[in-house]
Image (cartoon, rainbow, N blue to C red; front, top):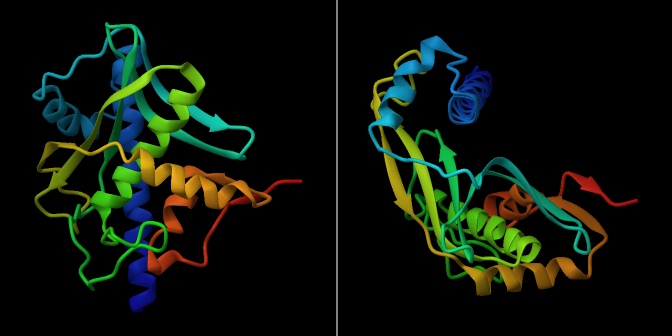
Length: 212
């Protein structure tokens, strides 16, 4: 019974997150509202007064063929200086912690970081930033998380909440160290899978597909 309940909560979280991502993407790319029941979430986002210029890419694929690693960034926005870009990511999970609830730390070479959402997301966005920098020749400037913090996180029928804008650091040196570990493997990875290996809870999970 408990495992079934956990599985249902995980599935509800996934469905909600996917729907919110789709809602925001369609609004900003086509000015359409594709899910009316979720419109309160969009209304709250509009209050942030976030605007994107014409050189903004939604659901942008970033990759490195040599290393066999790829990921999908929610938003990459070029800045007007023509030399830098920003990375943004939407999050709808129940919690966004800055420390580990069980005093766990990530695996080497990231053992200095607590195993928690803030540092996992910082590394995720840093990986996106690094990969896109390599692809474009531009430099990352700002990395931000847009997190929808619901007042009743266990109840997905209750949309009451607020968007929070969270700045995260560009952990370039840490990404270099992680990629050094991948350089000698024969595994193709999705960015989220690479991030998963850095938590003690997911140490056995490395990739979603092996290169042929």
